Image (cartoon, rainbow, N blue to C red; front, top):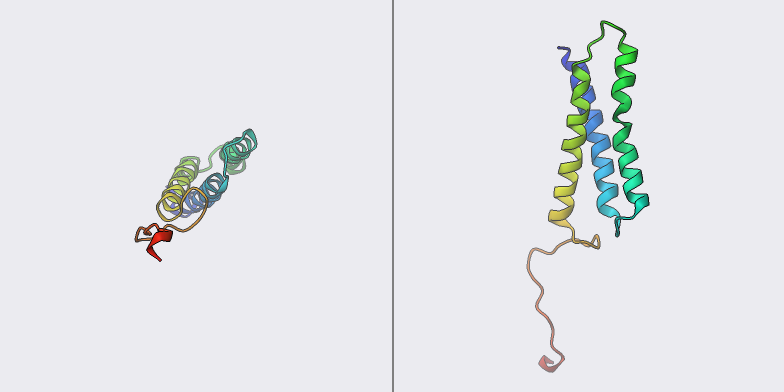
Length: 106
């Protein structure tokens, strides 16, 4: 197994997965356009077929399967980070809950 090719495919997958995850989490509503863009980016993993074609008949095809693994890892990490540190509206979550201010307290 060629680890340079595997690392490159994994890093490319993480990058593309993170971009799709960030785009998906930034959308306020899940509309057909958001789903279409996300799905088309992920279906773009047909890059695997292109890599296999470019590698030739005796090319290292097993290493390219690290690309979809990277897609999954990148997407999951960005979604977890977004949900942990930001609320639904993209505002940063505070570590301490804010106390509601009552006008009668003044």
